[in-house]
Length: 307
Image (cartoon, rainbow, N blue to C red; front, side, top):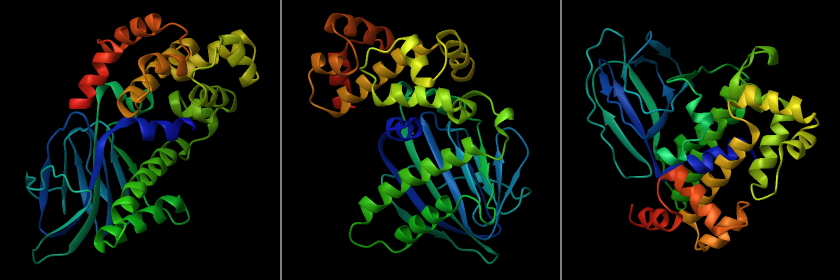
């Protein structure tokens, strides 16, 4: 798996939820801050305004996508001057649902999708994102993203046999396309910074993919540098500058994060998990895991099972 694929598979806890909501003007809703959540909204028909907690209102048109990766509060309204009422579209457990709020004005239809995140599953990529990502619809741009939106909207509007599997897969696809669109962006390579630059950098990208594909391999800074096609010192400097962590520090974090996922989602023993992520000693693995997550691997697995 490559880095973005791992991020999408890694960050979510539980299953996502989605809804197709029809609003008729005048309307305005306030959605509170929800720690440990992320979500995106797509305008399928009409137009509206996004009102972030900080910053200027953002006009949204048909096909526009908004991603809120940190669960910050926001408002949606037909006009920035419309008073906001507390959202009565509270958390729900359905994979997909539809709702309508009838009025006499122009109609706006929004596709909203959300999921829960856990603090121990926040990849640094997500932490590097701004509070609001707006991807405006542009003719000929991001056709895969637009196709996924259309397919998802169709499944929610007209559910058919197999819709649960289709919607879950499309939500993952849509999330991946959103991240890809943001990190690829319209910037020139020389103006990119942070994780966007790391993913765009061929050498660092190769090293990151190697770490994600083989976390249990006995990597060294020198071997990762050779994989990237750089000298040891040059690789270490470039990796640290772009990723924000030294190569072996990121390798250790990803090993332990991968181990936590295995403990939650597989029946592999602690010793087997330790070996798969590159630890020759279960004792050393246990100590490293406790430093990262605050509890030993066995207790982490038991707590995850009852969560």
